Amino acid sequence: MKKNILLSLLFLPLACFGELFLEITKGSDDPFKVAIIPFAGSAKISNPLHEVIRNDLNRTGEFSLLDTKLLLPLRIEDGDINYQDWSLLGMDYLVAGNIVNGQSAVDVIYDIYDIQKRKKIRSSKVFGLPSQIRQLAHYTSDGIYESISGIKGIASTKLLYVNQIKSEKLNSNYRLMLADSDGANEKTLLSSSEPIISPAWSPNGQKVAYVSFETGLAKVYIQDIASGKRESVLSQDTQISSPSWSPDGKYLSLTLYQDGNAEIYILRLRDKTLTRMTNQFAIDTESSWSPKGNKILFTSDRSGSPQIYELNLRKLNSKAKRISFEGTYNAKAAYLPNEEGIIFVHRSSDGLFHIAMKYNKENFIRILTDAKMDESPSVAPNGNMVIYGITEEDQSMLAGFSLSGASFKLPASQG
Image 1 (cartoon, rainbow, N blue to C red):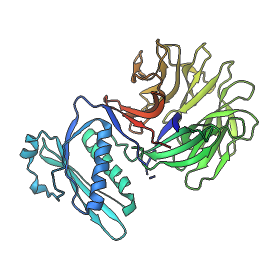
Image 2: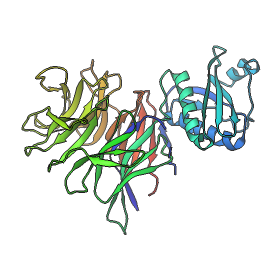
Image 3: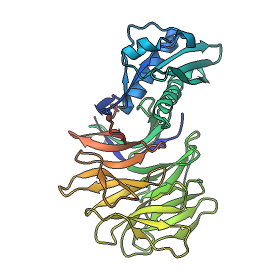
Image 4: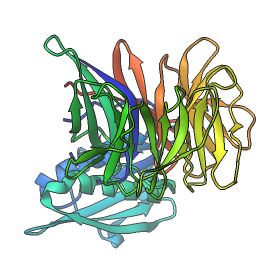
């Protein structure tokens, strides 16, 4: 059986659904050195909690964790911290905590100590049901990551992606999947014998838009995650693709082949009003919104090759502005969360596809990956990590990197 990750994946906010093998391919040149003492409390809870936290932090490539296999779980009071001993071990930070297991809830209480400054820098508690240990671990990891790095963590986010399974019995099966950020708890949202592409998560985290070919034409559907209820967004007998949600969740930008040509439209979901945004002889597609909702990026070949354009939605009769100039292929662009630049797919002079980034204040692009067929970059909410699709030795998988230089792979689990 062969599994291919298709074209689209996204980070999704918040929490729970086998686990994908994690391979750290490159770590930070100057990682944070951290000791995490196994939390005091029930070993049935503490052991898996400790393992998930360590895996979350290791996955960033920005931490060097002390091997604590020989350390017993213990509850540490502030006065018990011997900063000198931890400093001699080369540690920058110490994490300790305890677990309170009630009848209907679990409390995870943890403290973070700065060894060099000899003081506590965080004291936090997360709580949930006993069945939610993985989520509690992810939230704890995010707290540790933010306190030490100064950047919000993404361990508690979700991945949304499409995979294709081929076997001798089945011609092909496409599945829209939801999983934890570490690939655990995969959940199938939709299964189809026809292609599913371009999933897009609504800002409130309750719905997903995607393209399905089940009717023979590309159509955009919106599906409620909790109930599974779904509907086609438009009834036109034409190809519709590339949905992207506005930040307020009230609109979708789409590509419609209305007049025999692909153009960008904006659909107001409340009353299904369509507004045409481009009017060119060329193909305009792959739109994405700015975080503030005042601009969109899209791909167009109006210059003779696929390039990235930007359209200001707040200016009347605004004309699209080309913003990519290096190379003959730049596509699938998305804004960085702070709008300081964009990330996109770039084809280099050797014909290979890489993930690239361009800051607004720079006149050059930065090539961020080195595989042969990188695709579909998605920027994490913290702006510090990117997940994308790669193909290695005929196997498709998810890979990621942080802007600090760390990188990892999440090969697809077997279907």
